[in-house]
Image (cartoon, rainbow, N blue to C red; front, side, top):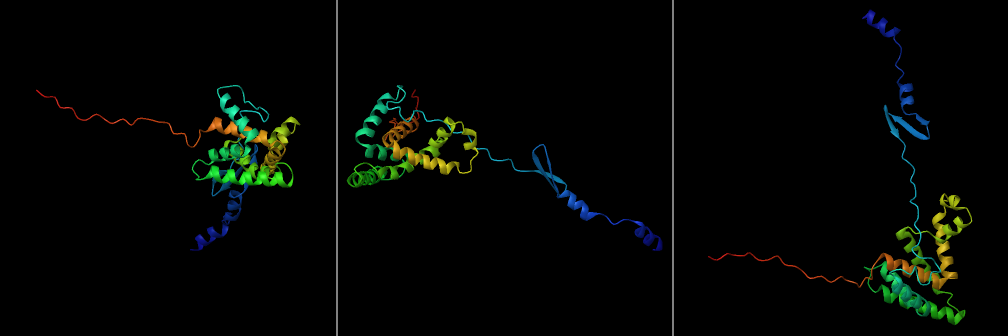
Length: 221
């Protein structure tokens, strides 16, 4: 017992505190953070990178589209945007929400009421664009399209700074509102052309003939 006590007295106390402290330390190297916990290195989560936006298939002022196979549809959109913007807007929203009932009627009535009220008070369509700009924001987010603010920033040479901005979505929403308010008819037509290129009309159902398997045939002698 005396020898064992002497051996224990000469031994050093294990440095458990320092060992755990060293294990839980975070080391940084080559731009990557490595956290060591309980002897197992854990890599830090990588930063989330935003996917690049895609341009619109037609420009804002491309009244007749790109003179492609959608020319007849683009011509229809141009006529509706010029003479019946209320119906074009309601049709665009109906395609964005194909499963919602009475979408065309509800948005047509709301837009028409704001259109008439704006012309009665201000002498121009000053109220309906405030209501319809939300559809442009929804369409842009759904297909990750390039916003007006991003286009303006790239034209000024500030595209890299704009892409890193934390208020990017807020600026894009403001850009959607400004586009609808300043170039309302052109904005509606651009959205109509984009929607018709990406999705069919909700009422369109491709006809098909159901095929039945032939019955069992019996060979007679």
